Image (cartoon, rainbow, N blue to C red; front, side):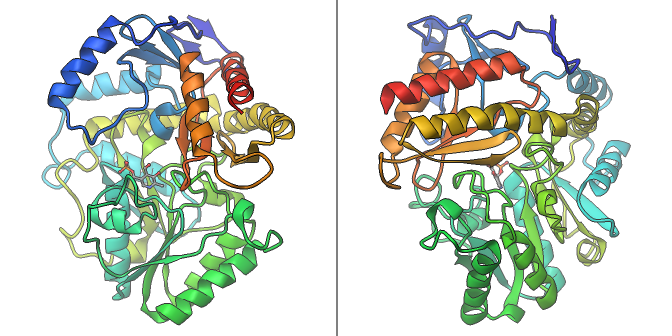
Length: 451
Ligand SMILES: Cc1ncc(COP(=O)(O)O)c(C=O)c1O
């Protein structure tokens, strides 16, 4: 057991150690079994199978240890085996695994709703509903907005990612691999230009001006009074960790309020301390009408939620919202423990600390390496955009090569971006400084070697 300055105790040694020729025999055998039975459409980034994970480390079945800079796509912020979460899950599962909240309710669901109503922005009267996945939360946020406003149109943005179900595919901007050949898609979804500071034609455009550009298009193409909801990721995730220019989100939210349009912040990826605040909208004081949450909410157990204005959510008739597993009691116990750990470990401060440690290193890299076109992000949601040296031309080949080189050294790094040219850093917030710095040094070396 090792302990950091943050009083986080690790069960596994926090050290990177990989054999030169991994994947090892057990992972190779499992990959063969998998190929025979698992659909090819499910792809995995890393060719090894997991045996154990804790803090910032993932062990595979052949004894290799990897530094985890992905958190299972922004999920395991408190670690993949946080003792409080593990204990709460064990305790809950010994009593009952499921009754269905819509049949026989239980306290855990209510307690999670109380926590989410407390933690989400705004001191207005709120209501919460629990589901299983991020996409399901997004679907339900749109359902509520349409019912409450009596309108159909939904506005989403360039580079958006909201999930893989039919409506959320329609809301998602990127064709391959998410949409191609999966249509027809849900109607009444309109896409507007995002504020993407690095790639603006006019680099001087302000957030307020970028919002005006979108609002003008909405008013011309749809009509403000026809719009049920605007849905936006306050920091776009799969689209490339795009942080909109300051003022963009507040201006959109103000316009939405004025027009009776429901402003939905999709915080599935950016929520729960990831950016150094409970939610990314907090950085600009934006109070969404509805907020969608998942991923980091429950320490790895499947749970998602929408929390929003009581008048909107209570507009829905009894039975209009729900699902067999939504707010499963074991997942609720995990969420309560996970939120407790976030508070106990001070994970907002920890995310800010990760930003301080990592941003400086990434900026140095950008100064040294002309292929690093942009460095951006907040807290522990950080990214670099890789380009052809001397231009802004996306460099997805280099991005793939860098991620592969990091993996070879035992560092799991995820890529993203509309152009496939963004390296994103999403470490568990409980990662030790030593491990993070080791991972960053591997990343820097991989970029230098492949640029
Ligand atoms: C912003 C955002 N919304 C929605 C989703 C969909 O979540 P899920 O994969 O749990 O359905 C994701 C997943 O990456 C996401 O990042």
